[in-house]
Length: 548
Ligand code: 1PR
Image (cartoon, rainbow, N blue to C red):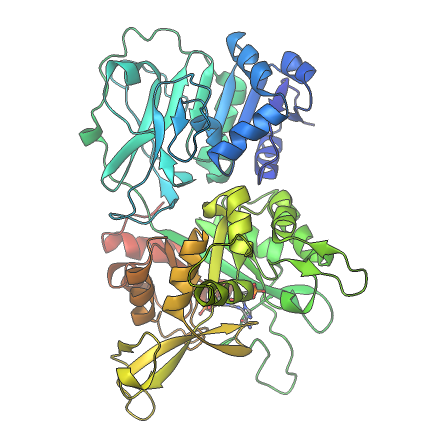
């Protein structure tokens, strides 16, 4: 039975709050939702998770008449824990919006510089306590822990006397050092997501629930670390990907294709069955995967919101998997032929976020949107699912999954598409190739290339690219490094390398040779051929920062 500590969750209706609920419940505590002003009075502790955009958060707070009661609650001295945008709005404002923040702390969120690194920042990093010399209490944050961050804006960190009063930790992202948590009087807030940060994150939540102390004595804490003292620990994510579909018996299974063909090559011709999605996700969580992805690979056949098994998978998985989860397949606006009912892309995405997903991945629909983008002379008319979902939930919640195929050509002049000279010549010795986009899981090819797609989806507001490669999928012959390099050169959003991993060396090559921000594999993990720990140890030996 869970313990009631008078803990409340402040939700303004954005994204995935289920994770916070599940994390708190997994720790054995009750948490209730704030629905009225009276709940602020009843609350002994409040957790305030924020997802999405700054302006949306501020507006929703005021629409719900939550701003004043929150300020009153803070004044009362009872503890508040803010998360992500729930920390950002405690500051004066953000470059993201003209709407001011609550102004409890001095400073403004600024956008990360995408000339020097991938933006949004998505991944695990350290939070370095800046005042350890003076204060023994760290709220359970230690330098050996890593936490999950996902954001494009942050408040710059300086070693000023002002900062010393409230900054608890700072984090470096490339050339920028920013405030990753604050602790002042009864307020504790983190830029990272404890509810998505595995055991370290759960420990931190537990600390807040059970042992939180207000920070009163700030006079001693004038001596803090300078930004130059904050090291660089941003790690490369290792992602386990589960392709999910119903098998011929109607059970939802994790399957795995060879170049997208998921049926056995023997007489049975059955859909390959590599396990159950929830069990496999729980296994990957225990094995220290940094993220998991579920791709509903036949959702183009159905209306995904009628596809309750997939939503059920997320609901179940989110009870035991406290790392980020991406879901893909059928994310688009859909009209039911029979009833005429229309679901907007935001409604579809929302159902998945409510079920526990942190990001949605858009495949086929992003190709159509990107084609329209170029046809319309690069206009952003707000029609696409990418634009609509990223506006509501922030670009970091929108992944675009690309399923390209190589097309060989004799010379660059043979096509108008973006070609590259290749070190892997074609069947007739062709020395050039371009990458053709496909839809419906590779069943249909389009007269559209991967550079056109990647640049368009970035402009439309996608926050990340999951870069598959049909030629490489399931081959264990290594990632298509030329493809990854080509896409990385053309975008500033993070790129996840996918398709073809077969040996530990393949993972480090994708990072060191092609600049991938994250590495993903399916078959070798499902079949227990290479443990995730071996991949991470190898990458670490190659000098790549990983989360242990
Ligand atoms: O078009 O928005 O409905 O989304 C459908 C989604 O399903 C897309 O993300 C698409 O990539 C995926 N998908 C569709 N058909 C297949 C298939 O395999 N027949 N799977 C499919 C894509 C590729 C990767 C795989 C890596 C790594 N699977 O996800 O996990 O290639 O595999 P490996 O490490 O074993 O080589 P929409």
